[in-house]
Image (cartoon, rainbow, N blue to C red; front, side):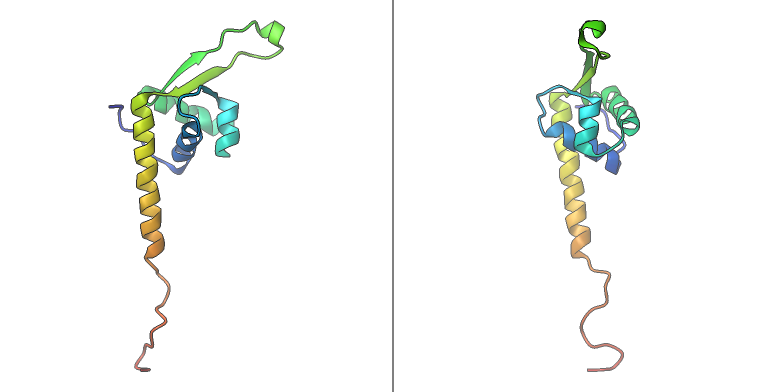
Length: 115
């Protein structure tokens, strides 16, 4: 089982983007586009996920001058990382549905002795 990861909203967004195609390799810019987060936020999260064993990464092997671009680092969820990511997203969805059902608004029932 992978190590525990500090779960933030941004981390959940990255995990959700990776889970769209969990067996595929993804590079930072595509993860950024799918999560709606800037690339400057993506890479520290990916580093934490990789350190915890949730993802692996590999550099693509290309001739940068022939391709006309820099090589990309591809990230892929591990099997345990996929299971942990799904679990964390389910926990967050459960918390959100619970908090939505708890209303902090005043009750429509009569109050202040007006019955």
